Length: 303
Ligand SMILES: C[S@@+](CC[C@H](N)C(=O)[O-])C[C@H]1O[C@@H](n2cnc3c(N)ncnc32)[C@H](O)[C@@H]1O
Image (tube, rainbow, N blue to C red; front, side, top):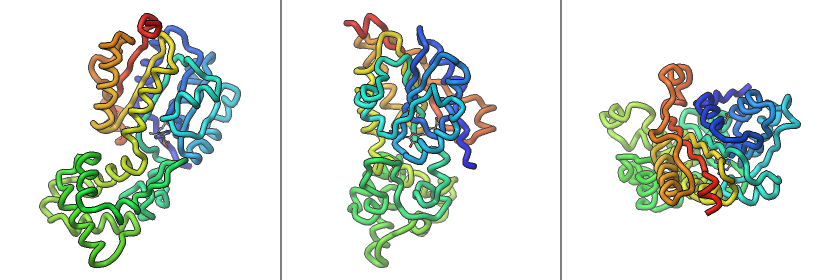
């Protein structure tokens, strides 16, 4: 059985508990249902709407949450359509909306989805519904400049230009790159050994992050859903976001600041919250997590 240990779940629950009333929670990134299970267990009066764009995540979460079936609704869709989803599910004005960004262990552990640089599989990386662009298309059809640009922007990869050059050279000499293993090999062959030693972990790590963000249009989806939140909340609604890299965190921080300065509410996390050392030692995935929380005020909403 595939497990996904939920990250900062206690801190997320504490943040949600600041809501003045607590009956309806949107788990906008349901995954395997770890957060939702914690909400339903902790608060017997709460119902949850769980959204995920990955149909398999929805299927697994349904099994994991079978004991709570009368208090949870499932929606397979992209959270960037939050306003329409909440209308359709009759779940407007929730008390809290929670995001746990990125990929789940379920997705990473399935080699055939192409998310992992440790397991060989096709270059896919689509999280779910609606996606047509694949990592294969990017790796094999983007120009050297376009590749370098996304590796730099979305992977914050120092050796972006060199890796892009290596990929294009391989394409010219040997043809297309079809698998994650092949891509890792090309990156390893492109970077000198001392550079790879300096990079520490797998040298393909940042390139894989960049490809995943581009394939799933993750940063624009995050900007879109932040804009959508404003349309569906009420005074007192709490927004909690757990993010895993600085690009996501920058978007959240900027959005929360803008809402605060325009009088829509206030940030409940003046400083970003990070997981405890104890949690990091138990769950390495928590290492880069950052939690931010915002509460909409009734004055702000009514203004
Ligand atoms: C880190 S996992 C969430 C894990 C979950 N908190 C748990 O405890 O099991 C992130 C999930 O968000 C989903 N996701 C990412 N972007 C999405 C989007 N734009 N719309 C809907 N779901 C998305 C992914 O498919 C993945 O299942």
